[in-house]
Amino acid sequence: MKVDFYTSTREYNDKKDEFNNAVLGVMQKGISMLGTEVTDFEKTVQEFTGAKYAIGVASGTDALVIASDILGFKDGKEVITSPFTFLASTSCIVKHSAKPVFVDIDEDTFSIDASKIEEKITKDTVGIIPISLFSQMGDMDKIMDIGDIHNLRVLEDSAESFGMRWKGKGKDYRHAGTIGDFGIFSFFPTKTLGAYGDAGMIVTNDEELARITKMYRVHGASKKYHYDYIGYNSRLDSMQAAILQVKIKYINESIKKREHIAKLYIDRLKECEFIKIPKIKYGQKPVYYVFNILAQRRDELCKYLKANEIGNSIYYPIPLHLQKCFEYLGYQKGDFPVAEKVAKNIIALPIYPEITGQEVEFVCETIKKFYKDGQIS
Ligand SMILES: Cc1ncc(COP(=O)(O)O)c(C=O)c1O
Image (cartoon, rainbow, N blue to C red; front, side, top):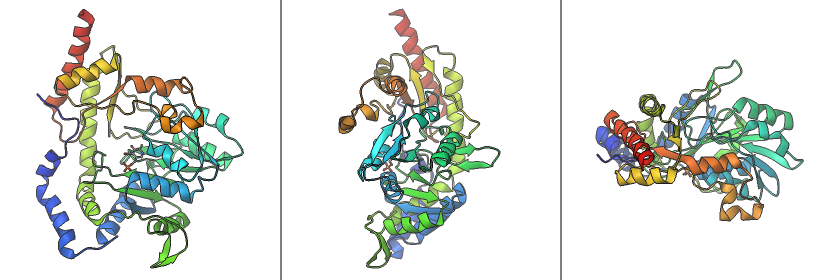
């Protein structure tokens, strides 16, 4: 049996007519930049997440760069974040010459260890970028408290977190990205809510931030050819918006299916002593965008799964403080032991709404066989 790590074709075949009609509809209506497809999708995201404002942009990376620019993450100021993530979570800080200051992660959530943030705050610190990875958020209550006490802006990198919800201090569940000053989503194709190309969104509850963001995505223009700021060309594409509007109709169903797959993995792998399965913390509602395990002999397991035609992936093999592009920051191996350990042991297994139970069983049996055979040899 061959198990794809990810495939878009099953979903496409299931909903072919809807996708085709959405795309054709955009073409038949005639080209429109930031047209009704975009505004409709923005409205749907507002309703789904509870954010007061949602502004579609070209990618999650652009969303981070634009939000960092607006929040003043620039000119030598320091922004606290964690090194175990995708490049864009930190490159957005550097783009306008601010300085990333890393804090190690919590091994369970893979997010910033909030108990270690305050010791890194200096007179130059202006913000925090917490990153919610794979299935859950870090300690958002503590992060927001630190932000309040020290007057720091919080930009949530919720690129991977569509659908995740946080239960804060007696309040209702709040959607990832709607807790800080700004939150961003990526609709990269493999994401829980994925387009057929690049797409992203910025969300905020602050009217003034939303007003400026709308200008920043169109070169900083308040109206055509009137530039209040030096902004970006970063519009959400109408075609992608039309596709996303189809997909978001099924989002609750696809989140449930992901949860079901995750439960199956957990159930089948929990007794395996060579593996650590994810632990959800802080009473939040997770969404299994990626299903990761921490595995002994990870690299051998990865090869073994590939040899058995089981797709897998490693997010993230090298923490950012050890990447060549960040050498100038002066960090050394050993500076963030949890991030480094996780990077050595983590492996992502196939998960998407259309994967079958039989395929998941096969993945689990193959993993168990690897360790069983390994024990004998
Ligand atoms: C944590 C994180 N931040 C930022 C991004 C950037 O998003 P995009 O690929 O849409 O530019 C991604 C995703 O790919 C991500 O996983």
